[in-house]
Figure (cartoon, rainbow, N blue to C red):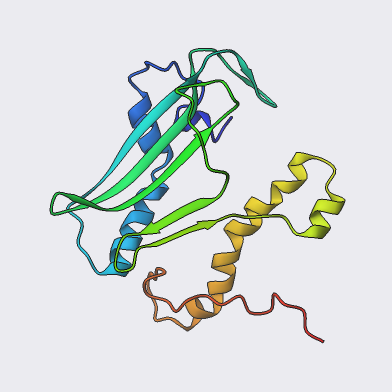
Amino acid sequence: PETERPVGFDMAIDDPALQPMAAQGTAVFAEAVQLVADALGIELDEITCVSEYAQTTEDLPMASWTIKAGHVAGVFASWQGISNGKTVIDINVRWKKGQTLEPDWKLDGDGWKITIDGRPTVNMTVGFLPPQDMIESAKTLEDFFVLGHIMTALPPIHAIAAVVAAAPGIATYADLPLPLPRGVVPTG
């Protein structure tokens, strides 16, 4: 609950603090919007967060806490980069708990859905599955949580060589070459 309550989970659905909570609890996505704008070479007039919520219609027991009926069990947060009055970048998340949401948000599965509007428009879905050895050895759902840690750690680990080779100062993905996953495939 320590990472879920700050975005509004288990708050009363009509609590006026929900919108600022979602913005503060998902602020890392504002940085991602700015990074995409930098990579595209565009100036943004503003970056804003728009959020929506769904409530559970009955008490929803979780592993270490319970979301009360009438409280938030679904959070949608959309971080938008605005240029010339138009949303040009939209990074959003939709998180839901349980099957008792009102409104009942339908999700098309887990992972990330990416759309790049252009010529051509590109649509893709990126999902993550555990390796077979993890499936075979896992005893509990918590055994799979390490995948999130691995996915978070790998990009900076693979960027170490490029960061060391870079000029002094702060560098972002827009300043460094694409990190390559060297050494992840066993040889010999």
